[in-house]
Amino acid sequence: MTVEYKIAVIGCTGRGDYGHDLDLAWSDFPNTSVVAVADEDRNGLAAAVRRLNPATGYSDYRKMLDVEKPDIVTICSRWVDRHHEMACEAICRGIHIYMEKPFCRNPREADEIVGLCERHNVKCIVSHPTRFSPLIATIRDLIDQGAIGQVLEFRGRGKEDMRDGRDRSGAEDLWVLGTHVLDMVQALGGAPLWCFANVLTDGRPATDADAREGAEGTGRIIGNTINAMFGMPYQAVAHFSSRQGAGVGHEPSRYGLQIFGSRGIIELIEGTIPAVKYLGDPSWSPGRSGVQWQDVSSAGIGIPEPLVAPKYQARHWLAIDELLSAIEEDRDPVGGPKEARIVTDMIHAVFESHRKRALVELPLRRDNSWKDEPVYSQESSR
Image 1 (cartoon, rainbow, N blue to C red):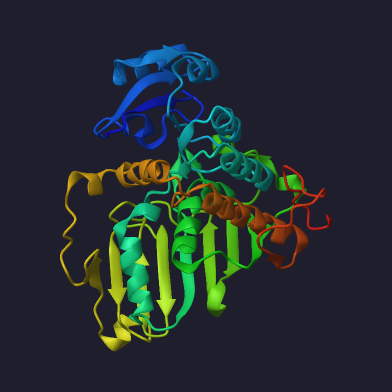
Image 2: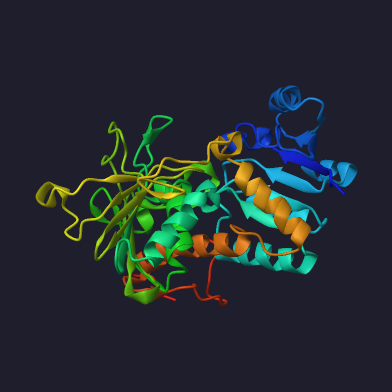
């Protein structure tokens, strides 16, 4: 029997809006129907109702959840400040979730969402599209087959770009775009074991005095340059860096991930069918070796991409398909809150390592000394 899913949408016009068209993600998906949308902004709500016609509009998302009783709610806002609140309201009503990244603001919020999902048997997926790409399985297979030899390091960067007239490199880049890169690291390399990081403001070690309110609801952030190293399983390491002024105006950008092995490199950018390149060069230096980069498809190295159906071009289709499968099979979804919690820990570990001026173990300790907002002073200690 075909199941028809009732979908509700929560948007926040002016406070994250409807990020990456999450509200429209269901428009061509079979057996789903968007029945309602909530937005506290009157004009934003009117526009959303027109886009999602015949959805019913609500100014209060809680009322929408209670009246409409949807099967799934899409939390669309790019801003992270209300993700935890909205997710918990949905979970306690037994409503499954598709959520824009970043996941939530801190480890405590992440723990609560994970715990509530388990208690209420709710499935939740965070929108990291690369996690659901068939290329992830291809890259894992290439690594397992020894295409790049022993994995030595993962090297990722943020976009280091401008938005709304500001350079968002450093902490904002880590939160807003680094979440994709760190999830890619985890998807291909496993959960990290430790973090050692340095955070700079205008070239000097960042302190409490540099803390500022971050864009997109992140809360207090610090630093316009970040250099972080994570210890990975099997003695590999992963790096994430973002430096003020390093990427503005350059195309193509360095945003993405490179995996360096003893026999070569695999490079991928973010997306459902991302551009993936392979360099079979142990020296990592094609200028010296003469070895050429090769394209990688879901079918392998140098083979044209066979997956050309519209669902592979859509940003959200594969993630939604995984969410519905997890609901129907009653299992944890790929890219769910447990994986997203690891990314949240990785982000906070960067600032905790800088604060302590020391390596910190992952996952982060959960104890009474943990604060909702980390203290960034080098002199501070637990």
